[in-house]
Image (cartoon, rainbow, N blue to C red; front, top):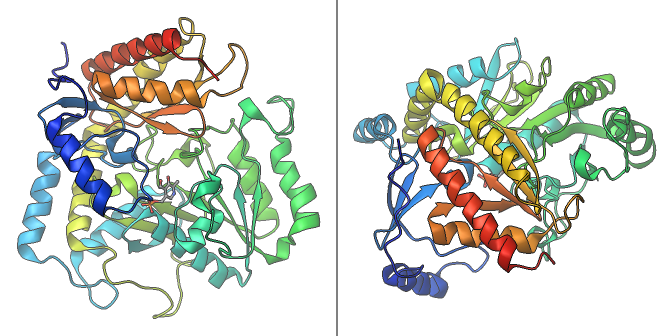
Length: 450
Ligand code: PLP
């Protein structure tokens, strides 16, 4: 079956209505935003998105890995409408309501680890990370953190201090929170130690123990290692088998907490509930969740064992976190993921990974594909056979995809990321891949790699 979308009817993009909105936006909206192309959304259904000029796009980034259930899923919309008609807000910090408790119970059962859990609810990924930072410091009595080069954990001062993805995100904002040491992530394609897996013995973990904890920051002062199970903004980088087991063993050895940021990788995105589950036996002390958790309604969650998340009333709280409408959207989202979307993600993700890997043979500037479920990174290289990235080719592919009606985004310096809604059908995936390849072919013919 052929997919209906995309359908671009404007003679060129942006169409006239979109162009007018972009001009108004330029005059009024903060210039700090990073729009890659002029998509002005009118409405959406599943993986299809229609712009204000009536152009229909296939959405392969779901509002940056957020819209797990696709646009306007009827079950999610109904849950939101039903809850909105009952009450919109009642501050979970000061009062009780069943929606928040039910969601905490559910998340506690999904997050890895046998111990009973508690959850702190907020509105975003960065707040989920802020909570993890505070909890780790409070419970350990230690102040220091280890984070990773290439990491993205958010943009508020605490989480920004852990972020090391692009220098512009920090430029002009120093000092951020003191006490963070960044170490190399397990990026085996571009190993900073110039070693090869598995003969390296995961020297990047040994480096933390042998160099960082001995010379830079004492283990007894280190509250937590904060890490993404797959580096998202950093370029969709997947650590090798055994990596997180070794990292966890190191953390345990020194009584350091392991905080796993699942903001982008969580809620079924990688074909498992949480990315860390691809490394069996790893049980994070604290897990942060947001993005796909409520299909686009603002919600963040920080989950830890009941024992760890026991801190005095007043030590942490908020006004909007765990908003009942967001909780209702989240419960509906979780049910859909449980019932059908986890399986769809595995199937469609495996199909896309296979097709994209086959494409590598036909396109010399496509370097490699990193894929887990529907979290797929495609790296573009300047020189075939090398790991020298080509931001120019990547950027051009992103633009050509938009012109052809598929929405993709960059990640890291030279990768395209595909993070479609988990409802993406195989037919839609086939159409998207054909268009993607057409865009790559065009760019390889017309663009200099450097
Ligand atoms: N953590 C990770 C891994 C992320 O990818 C992001 C956002 O991209 C965040 C935290 C911050 O989330 P938010 O933008 O909702 O604050």
